[in-house]
Image 1 (cartoon, rainbow, N blue to C red):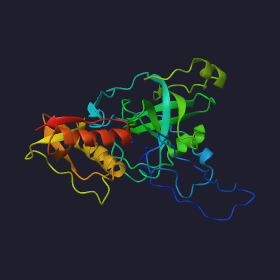
Image 2: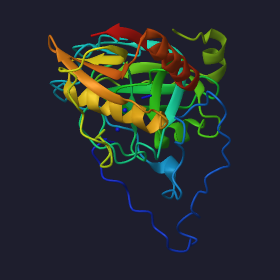
Image 3: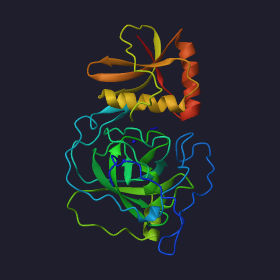
Image 4: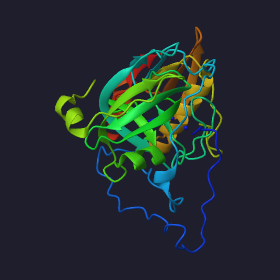
Length: 300
């Protein structure tokens, strides 16, 4: 659930010439088995064809950039409050890293940039947008530097969502997720060498888009009254629209409309209305089974 070396880079063209001695043969995507609660979003996955030499894609290069005007405001998703950092500062955390791919390729990220699954980018709940981070696979010791330009992930206590290319270089595309360490990289900092894999494993402890063209316009719920399910609250309308689009892609069975309720500078996503709290609770339970979070009932 949830958004990217610059996320605004256009999708790369895939060369289809025959391999030669001077150029390695194209890499073939491995076989994937999407398990319940796997590392990437439902119906997401790798591209049908891949650029050559994914391992050769360079890491993001940290450089001074102004922070985004809107993407760093406090927000609420799935009943949980998030307060993004308002300045660049040291950060380190360990937890589960996942990745997102073709389902969001070409969609806008929380920064407004277009997500490119073959760029070295990442989504993080609270790191400043934009900022840079070194992500290390604790099992192998491999590290990459990514540019954070999107928000997420919001499920299963995951600490970061990497682009397809970044997860490929860390070696966890097939498994979907891995235990990682995320450490901020400030512009001008000297590069650090990643610790040895055995050292990382010994101390590893988990720590707690443009809306698709076929999606209807985000409606206003000001005039509606009744019982609703609240799915999230945002300080920025673009972020609300982006998260609404993700939910529509994941909850294709929804019969009700996801509205936006604007009040006191916040944009709250409300699903409904329902006849009563019991009916709303039944839908909330179905959403919990599908996405591992339970929205709460609100009365208007």
